[in-house]
Amino acid sequence: MKKLLACVMILPIFLFGCSSESTAKSPVTEFSSVASLTVGEDKTECEIISTVSEVTLTINSGNTKGLVYRCDGDNIKSEYSDITVSNSRSDFKSSYPYLLYSLVKTLRAADTLTKDTSDESCTTYTGCCDSGEFKAEVETSTGYIRSVEFEQYGFKAELSNVKEHK
Image (cartoon, rainbow, N blue to C red; front, side, top):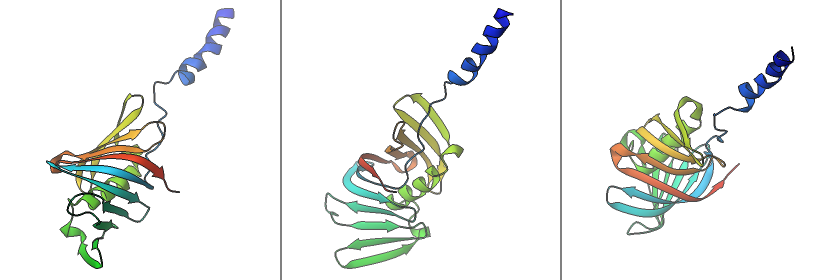
């Protein structure tokens, strides 16, 4: 009887207390950050601001310093000094801002993506969004996006100084 009682008391610990599932935070999709973008051999520094309705990307280095892209999913605006150009979605499916916009939109439903938690400090999400297949590394403890990669475009973004917007 004592053995049965001991088993009954210990069983919940094994079932609920020893889960190998990581307690990773969901990806933060409303944020601002500094980013280093690499496309093929080209590298540039920028600032990214992601809100519920749009992604804004401001170039901070190189010949295009000061160029601002705004993507709301349907249109993309390019702004430089006092010049603004607007394009429809079909023209920019692989542009930096749309890659980031479609990825962030997809990360909002992270539970539908493939998740690798083998690295305790980082959760890697892989999946497909409007722009194609991607890989996103997210800090497990904060939910902040560390890096994003679209291999088919040779695109990689390394994010730092991430600040959540609520």
